[in-house]
Length: 230
Image (cartoon, rainbow, N blue to C red; front, top):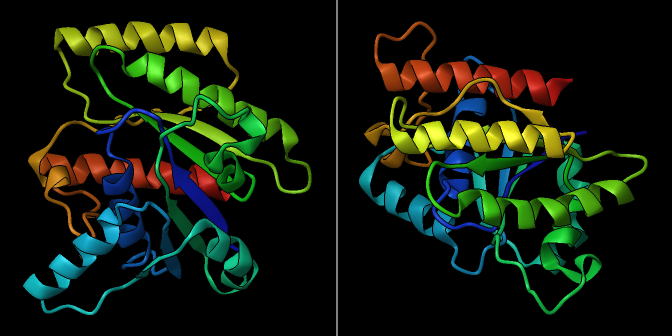
């Protein structure tokens, strides 16, 4: 049985697709070598387009599979995918429909499948407001889960230590901790050019690396694995 994972947030530009690609590439490569599948259910198909561009630029056999799926296709195939993979990542649009109740939101149907929802939070104005709207939907989906519970985990992405935005973010996160009972990742992913340029083929994991970006990512993915294996 796999771990079904979603990086989700209503706010755009928080790195949902990039985190999906980086995590999938690392977990499917050495030293982890897990069976990983990515379902791109976002109509923009950003991960599909990135994979095609990567394959044109780099002569490398992909370590994990990415396919576009409609939500109905994913729902129909999830049991089969669940049996043959260690990790299934779902790259989904974050937009909420303000005219629909929580149980009719498309994202709710995906959250009812997932084992883990990782919510990336970035420094900047209005980031936390959008996150709270998404979190409300997620917690309602979590309350409906019975046999296979949903774990909600917040993480800081694109952090810029010692900046004013970062200080405000720390204060907002402390406030969020008092409002909701969810897990927070201890490792923050900083803003590195290497992360923005990450492809869907190569792993950035390198334990003990002298490269600050690779060292940061390696620490993060190790914590990610620890969380998802509990």
